[in-house]
Length: 152
Image (cartoon, rainbow, N blue to C red; front, side):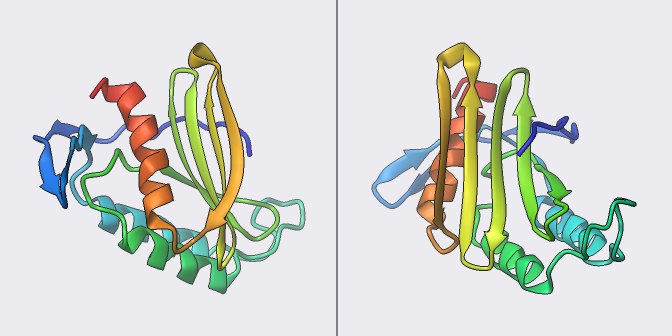
């Protein structure tokens, strides 16, 4: 999973909001978060075989469906819209990058997410796999990334 550049999208600050018995600071987010991600997934689903001119298969429909379900469970104000990147293996990943800090969530199978959490300035390099239904883990990782970007 290689870092990519962040698509800069309109950001606005929102106030912390209660969630259960904790307060979550939403930091910056892009309006239309879910809509924009679904548009990207539509674009990737339409890629033909050999989209990379090197024999890559189409993005697996089960991966697209799993990604749609995965993002539908994220709060809309969780983060900036990530870059959505297809892989030559027929999978896809969501990428956030800011300076040298990055987070990648790759939908490897319809049931697993492989993540890479990296920030050399904080000596952070972590890579693991978690179940796609573990939304708490996804939120934790995304909020880790956003804390470093927005200092919230």
